[in-house]
Length: 396
Image (cartoon, rainbow, N blue to C red):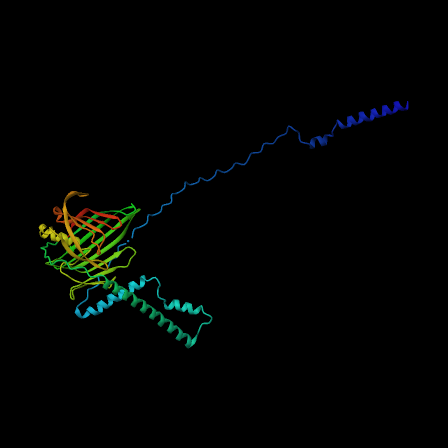
């Protein structure tokens, strides 16, 4: 009986526990979320990324060869024989200063000396300091004078070492000066390494019964800009020998202006960029006037172009005899059409110049130079071909 009672009691307890576990209170059931409940939540919209601009090409301007037009005020030539010595001294001083500027070791300046003194262990003040400053300035001036003297001595030695060019034969030409005009030319250059350049040039001159003025400008086109590389200005008088220069100035890009003086009073040819000095012979020209002088000789009588045409030409720091010969008569293509020309050549001359200069004179266009070609010793070639010709009045 006891065992039966125990079994019945355990069965009652079991059924009560099963009944208790199978029924969850309502408040707990309400608090628990149903497995079927769902909540829709809008996902945040991502903002579109800003558009990325395409990469821009990097534009790098090509390098400019060795040269912006600078108006030049022509310096008056020496007024007379009495002023020859001061003018020569001034020219020698200018040459010495230019050579001193090119020296590798620049002379000390008073300012740099002062900075050096200030960096020492102790700065002097009062009268002692003033004396030290004066001594420093004097030392600087002495250094400059010594450097200039050495440069002048070297320039004179170089000039003495190089003999002056032999004067051309006394050949007199009948000349007819070409009337005033402006000639524009296309410029095409090929460097020794194959790099090609293009640009334009201007040959402009005005002639009056007593004087003339020639201006030459040459430049290249870089991107959308025009870069002037060279400006030549020649001024002087006119006479039976043709153009008679008195002064030529030359300005290259990135370089100081130089001047060539044709001293008619004392019969010498001098240069601001060197101490060289040459005797002035009839018919001497400069780089700007020589093409027009050849045109004047051809206009006077084309038969004069036979044989050698020797002209002493003053350049920026030296002079040499240009010897031209007629290579023949040729037809050349230009923006003005096909033109009949006479081809003149100045071949390289050892000891004087290493380039080959060629000119084409056009009889149908007043013997004006309609093409100029220069072949340098390095192999670089520059060709200038006429584009327009516009005659002018002397005063315009």
